[in-house]
Figure 1 (cartoon, rainbow, N blue to C red):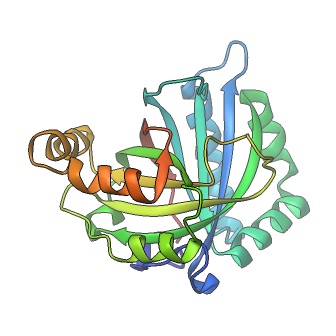
Figure 2: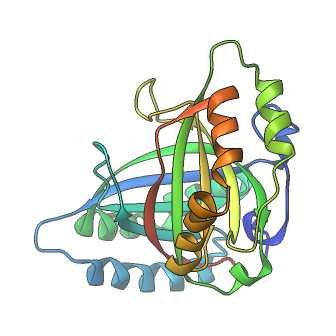
Length: 238
């Protein structure tokens, strides 16, 4: 597989070697009247066949709310990851012979799309075959006077425990205006299941995991608070 979110462990972020970044396309969607998640699943069955036939190498996951607060209203969040080259070639292939796919998708959901730079920081091999997971995203903004070099340094020194299957950083790129997201950058975590996610919460509350979190909040960045989603992997690259 060519998808480095799955196949490599990288410690990087916004101002460290950009070659380590991959493209992350997010589609914020709502189901059209009369449509259900079953209809969306039927669409992905068609997309999987088309992707295999046309050598469309991206990783796609569908996320639905589990714990979502504030004013966040995302009934369905579709995330697609690939190298910049593969995602660009993928859109070209859709333009050449996949227009019917876009029509079929638009019949099920109404979406807005944006593109971000995504920097993988950690992954567990167990995630390579785990298609039903839980994702948490938390958006953060640097404190006044905190440089990107300082942010890079603290992130590079982080370690990840056994509960966390995958971790990375999101930096908005295209289709986003100031104020669209509640922060400059986002922390993404993927857990094998809800039990692992809540075990991590137990570490924070009862095993002094809050100390590292509070140090980060006090010294480096303010964060909006994590939103959790049930995540289903619908397409993996060949």
